Image (cartoon, rainbow, N blue to C red):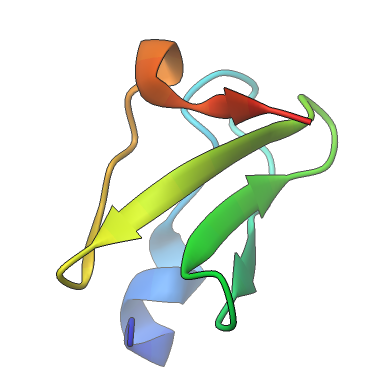
Length: 54
């Protein structure tokens, strides 16, 4: 699980917007870009080309 401190400073690498943390699916979601960034072993994978579109 990601810490609240880390969540407060993370931003979408594409649009620099806010991210929502989905604790159930362990993903960071950017609603503006419609991208999901995976979190693996409590490490956010913030690479645009590895994000999942929704």
